[in-house]
Image 1 (cartoon, rainbow, N blue to C red):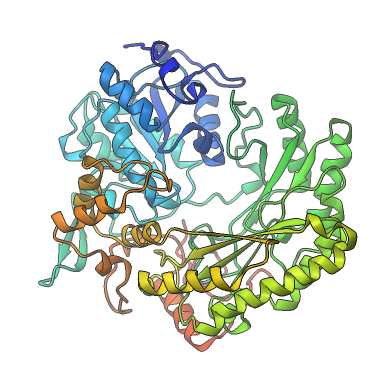
Image 2: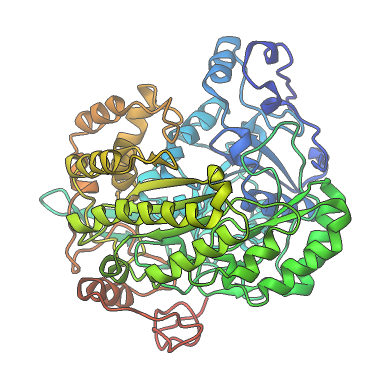
Length: 611
């Protein structure tokens, strides 16, 4: 086993702490005693990857097992990539400085499609063939998971296996198989064994078919692979593993705090939201469990902020009891509590006052649309009254700054819907000035305006993204209409959104585009300062594919989709019903408090097939 270090390079690159090891609570185990060795990779910089709870959970699970080890690697920034190539050094793990090629399994957490080219960089620097077909005995198994892998077909030629859904249980089953069938001896046999694990998809065992016009038509399993791969879901979430001894980095990360996952899944059925569809059903941890986890995490890390993670934290049963318990238990340590995003119909004055007891964290509300008609289309079951009640509660509790999220380009959107955003912001500023009074100088509303991206496994997966020219007109209108200095507008880059839409609805033909763009120099495509759309335009042209066929085309309900064989619980019939309900502006209630929507993802559904 080769052991290397970057000590001679650290003085030549920005933020050298990204590449140093031995952080507090990191785990270092003996490679010679491990029966399966994993390198958990996040294809973005250290500060982003170390903010991802999923990676921390898998690191904790694997290293808690006596027979397995897990180490970490992140995408090197462009200066470090250049330095490594010039020095002829491979990408190594943080813990033991071992090249990626020397591990048994390389596991990528994919949070976003725009990180795909960084995956290629990490494999290439790690000394691993980029294409799965070129790997031989002795090469690691390349595994991926996360929401960015919910349609892995564009990456199918580069990945050995994909975990659908939640990996807490599946990762140990994968480790057991890798220990019995090491890739150094029989990769082919190992892949066959992995395909038998529930929730594991092995792309090489499936053959896509295309129609005469070049569009995806079907996919056929081979060598005994199952026709459909059903997602994994943790049923007993209260007992699910949680890493209380979280690694404490040497540099500030994007989310430099304890992340306490209070609930998972959402049944609000927002029709644009992929996470709300693929992480069903809703499950919660008990207040007792969470208080215990928080106490241990604070003792192990010394961090002084706790973020309550959930799709909408105020939906948690017992949210106020939990916040009271956390603040009372740790008042002497000045530990504050924050919620990353709140629904306006569940955010109350009482909740605002509790959050402000130690120090006021940031507040975020996501109305998404500014008219009730469009909110009904997307099934965002909040009203304008809900929003202004939430804003009033925040202002009354002393908040002068907050964030609002809106989206443009949503299905059926009209000119009036965009104009309503500017009007709503004007009224929000007026309310803030009135409520804050002499303190109105503190009023700052940050507004993020995203571009709608049709995502697989959602009711809007059939809609094409709006043309770039139309999105540009809407952005220009909002820039001219919102002039108050109390509002700071920010935008999703239209070219980035267009690329994400194309990739997320892609088939295997897009693999040539991805690889071609990477070869031409595409790196860190989710970073505005690095994104180079001209490379992607040329890559599409070289592959003789049309960007708009993937991003902008409206797909008929009867067409086969490249991801139809990947089952995330919600049935295609349910998604079709929701798509038609959107056109009618009909609402689908939250099944936690109303009738079952028969989505297929839980035992209450008549179409539930089990896990």
